[in-house]
Amino acid sequence: SLCSLPYSFSPTFTPIKRIVFMHPGDFTPVCTTELGEAALRAEEFTKRGTKLCGFSCNDSDSHKGWIKDIEAVTNGEVKFPLFCDPNRDAAAKLGILDENLKDAKGLPLTVRSVYIIKPDKTIALMMTYPASTGRNFDEIIRVLDSLQLTANNSVATPVNWKQGEDVIVNFPLSNADADEKFGKDGYRIVEVPSEAGKVLDKNYLRYTSAP
Ligand code: BEZ
Image (tube, rainbow, N blue to C red; front, side, top):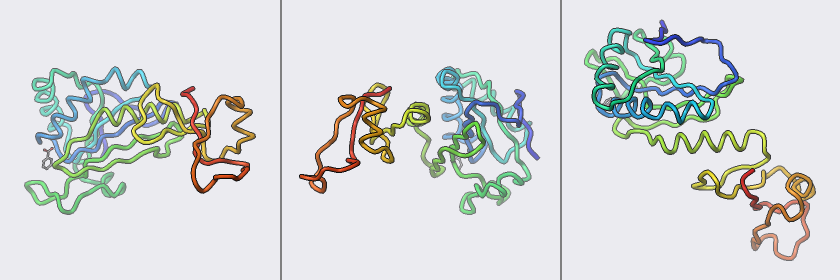
């Protein structure tokens, strides 16, 4: 069964994004650093309208004990819920059990995944890492910024994009639509060999400044 500790968490989603951090297990080194980082950066997530929770196949006593370790080691206060799934019911349904990663009893652990869940309860992003590699929280925050920006603005973010950098005009937009949306001089078309000498309804690589 699922429970949340030590903070309450409503299963009803509000118009706020949720991030779920699946972690392979309590009292493991990489996971300890990750949840400590999540705690330390809680404000950055709050600022982006995002609520956090952890998830593993441990029970509430285990989570309670581990939270003390996380807080002692990282100085972060774990204010977000950690789901408990000791019977692996939810993990099995979600298909997040790694059959190559077992606990001391030989039971499978969960993969090291991040889900970003949209207000409509659909998943915007899933990232899965091996047990040996901790997640990159700068990247998770960067993705949140991209999701925020691209949700309503007819733009997409290019490779390695960071806050403040130029963005891409959404591929489905025709040039006429882009003229209307950004102004004729409000975006630039990148010349590519396949489009040379052609007058097109839509050039595919176009940049504009971040809205
Ligand atoms: C870790 O977080 O360090 C870890 C988790 C599961 C298996 C091995 C290591």
